[in-house]
Length: 102
Image (cartoon, rainbow, N blue to C red; front, side, top):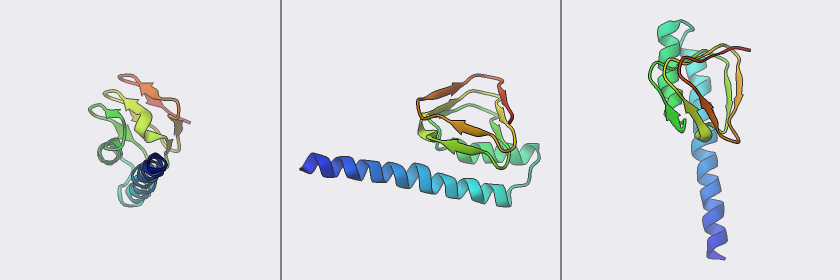
């Protein structure tokens, strides 16, 4: 019975940290940080804290939606354009120099 409660607490902690806090910060960044190169780099630094791994100079434009960010591995010099949907539920590795756009 104790193992069951540990599992439930672990799932709740994952939900609280990676879903609620991440999406709150994502929306806050979309509102406060304008869309220009330096702003996208700042957004990439803030949101990259929740990724499995985040490279240097990751730029994320506003309006992007991420699912299962704890399984997302992003390389160096990656740009994710406006309103991209990225689902990393099975684990996703984005290589160096990649550009994503809708």
